[in-house]
Image 1 (cartoon, rainbow, N blue to C red):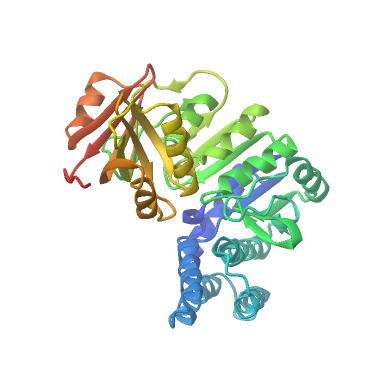
Image 2 (cartoon, one colour; image 1 turned 90 degrees about the vertical axis):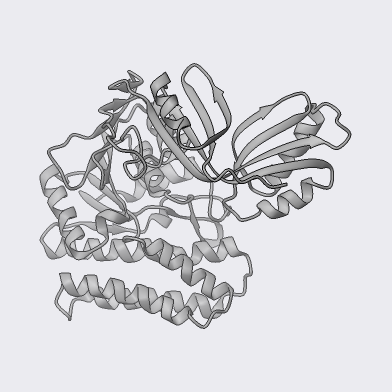
Length: 421
């Protein structure tokens, strides 16, 4: 069994969907599972629907109509007007309307998962229908009947034993089309696996089916040594080890989802990252072996970070009890820690605020500690750093903090040199 994953960029238009057909014909699709994300930026569009719904905004219907028109236009470019797919789309939007009118929960994360799921359902219905239309028989599979999770909405945990049983029972077709990112929780509720979780979905299927390999199809040539939107003259990494890929993901590299790699490593399933445009390019292969080929510095950039310096009000040492309390607060406010450093009198931490709770955290911690912080700073991580690579990063602004180990250098840069207390 092979597992292919196509992200939003690869199914964003009628032309993109036709290109998926080109890829499948070129690569072969016998015994293949195709995992598909929502089209283009539709997940963002559904997040707008969610916010409009929660805030009771008058633009709710307009936001829904934008998504409907987007998908109807793609279908109009692919099918005759009387094709059954148009009815299937209206059924999906009918289910969305039904949820919006009957929901009584005020749990944002629950609401998020029940609404955002429609992006993947729409994209897979359209792609599956088009494949059948061009004489590529396939089976559309509702992934929520396969991948079972707890009800930790927006970041659900997989029940691996039950999921493996489900997948082995239900994947029978020569070519199966299914959704990424979403899953099934308790009480028939939809859950999601975390943003960009479609890669993880592909890894789950591969693990449970002992797949031959997984291929993630991207709009880049493979895994590069830096984000080409931020760095010039990037280099394609032809081969990286599972360990190296996990390290890069941990530090924030966006090509491969962090949770994707471990299941593949456990069963030594190779992962390919390839371009859906240049099919002659073999891209990057991730497998056990050499850390990185070619060996070159790799740069990971994370913007919009906070550097917080915390010290005791009585100038006493920052000891284990202080650190335990600080980390509890960080956890309580769902702040992600990306770097830490401590001295006798202060503790510094670089964090990102994915849930918009930084101000509340600062208010809480200032009750017991003296706190200074920088906002809107950038964290650069360099794997396999050279002195030239470090010098290049340090020219980008004021260096606030630098930390080095044998394989990794992290540098916090303040491009605006703003300082608050």
